[in-house]
Image (cartoon, rainbow, N blue to C red):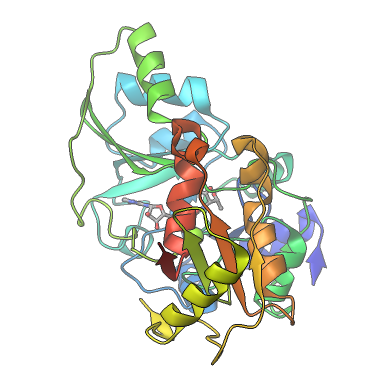
Length: 331
Ligand code: TXA
Ligand code: MG
């Protein structure tokens, strides 16, 4: 069911959930003060409770109420990158941010989305909403309203805001005092953040590693299409790729980290995931291509051919996602 902005706001006020467009991917939104809505988000997505939700806010002022620490670095990053695809993970205000949202962690992920409809909903609602990507747990994120409709078989109300401009999820940045760490790569990269903080003369350091307890939602597998995706790490012709994929098939588990895949007994047709040479354009089409190919009935497996230019930093966020979406590497 497609709804208007006002209907979306009414659903949220009534403690329901609704899919909302953002510039990155569609989110499944619920009011942060409604335990009922938060529970419904987890239930609808079949999401385990250890994976924390990102809270969407309309501006810096609203963000500051939801945290117990707001540093000069947070202020500068919010000024420069909000609204936009940057999530800041900060010490939470436990009075307003429940353990359900943060999976019991002392910190909360906050971001101000750039999509005009998301901002309109936030303004009319007068409260922040939590919103994970609007897909079943572990699967490919939705970048069009139709993806959400298909994912939940029409059971979730959707505010249609067209195709998402960025196409991959926000960069997640952990801030602990003046120590920083990227928990999830995105369009806004570490080098850009570093340059900006240097320009602003804000001393900071990058953490060398991130512990599981700082980032519990980051699993080995994620963004998985319904059919197995193979990763060709070296050049090979189509016949060789098909043979190698069929060999790997014998040892592929049907379920990884709670995500089930349709594993055929034999692969007859392996479809190549063709991506533009420009990483910004690729991010925009990546998830819809994964979906389109895996939903085509004649195709029973997908293959991605790695190129040398994919190792450039601007491809980092895309390659990280493709790695997690991959069932087996062919070499
Ligand atoms: O672009 C996006 O961020 C999209 C749109 C809808 O805003 N949202 C999104 O949410 O990607 P989701 O639930 O699919 O991914 C949230 C991830 C978690 O899996 C975790 O890795 C990280 O963000 N995260 C959220 N809150 C955190 C916290 N308190 N501490 C550490 N990591 C957190
Ligand atoms: Mg997600």
